[in-house]
Length: 567
Image 1 (cartoon, rainbow, N blue to C red):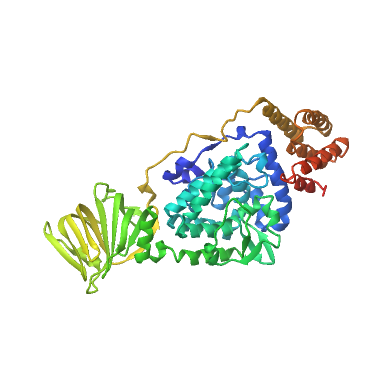
Image 2 (image 1 turned 180 degrees about the vertical axis):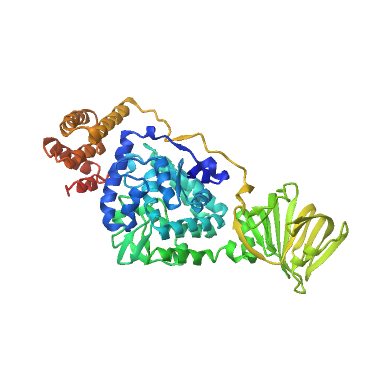
């Protein structure tokens, strides 16, 4: 069996870390249990039918934080795998992981202060949210396909600024004890980054479709639906509030790609897919509008504006990999002109051409289209002028000239090297002393990234282990020990032994931790499930009710009590 790490494209391996399971504390395990026990109870009724079976089949238990190695082994049966990452990874990397059937799962877990919802990635959302529905073949296929489309959709520099601002805001909000002014500053930077976005990029539109389906999707009818989005399947708050009439339910269509979202707030509307087959139909409709499918002048413009590494696909079969520093239609002609700078390479059918090593010493020019008489520029590939000068009239007022230096035959596709190249157009003159250049009759598509992953430098998995070791103040360390003792008793002690230990723990809580509600809930949950309703259970219930009032409903104590039958 091939392990997940062996399936990770070499250039993405630097994002992979090792899950250090021993670093999860008793509090971490209590957070997992509090959320998963309640989610599982509710979602058996409200989630898509695949959810219940999918939890167990993908290696997830409501009782403990999952081992990602065990999840990986379980997911392999469905053509998927799981790898640990540390927090946010770039959106491009995330889509590339999904395209090859890998779930990148943040190994960190949310703090007890953010049980209901956290804007930062964590193992509850990414494991218990995304994994269960993978057992459904149609949904599994959709996740891979939207990963493939997202990996080829062009981002914009403004997208990257928004991503950086979201990353900072989410990290600060999840940080225990974050100062209000630090949160406000991060919120301000996020708002500024959003305001600077001039237009929705291709990647932004794919991201919106992903958000309204894989993250916050409903399936069925607008008045009779089930939950399947990971954001809903992992949120105590929104899995409940999403049913409120104030949250508008809209039939899913490609129009959702024009609906922006805010990762830091509850969603005001949700989209309902008729079934999982419709997800693929909507994705196909959106993909049909993107540059890697449409080609032509608009695709070249998208490639240039994105400033990303890209692949230009010509009708000759040649693929150019590099950064388009400028790309536009040559005025008065049917010709597109692209300049690739920096490190570039050539490929065919997604494979680098070994006879043409990646170039980095000169520019690469591409002239694509037809001359004024309708003759395809691809026919110029037959030209063999030796060291002679040349001058080609491309159209009215547009002339390409220079001196031919060398011709490379790349799998029947010639690539030329020239000197003193000059492109004169009504808009101006472009000159370079040396450049590689190619001809084509049409630009079939332009997509983000390299056609062949071997273009990228190889990387190795990080030596980082996550969660990282933490040093706790003495007061907090004693609390963590109480959680650990309670959890151990819950799992293995007899009822008599557990009750005796819980009395001791409760005494410490009264004296030293009067505001801690989560451990009190864990004690009460264990007692209720063993049928030990008595003085201790009554005291814990009373204290939790008091703490619910003192926290003004800001902690999910009431939902925890309802789960235990104290509605």
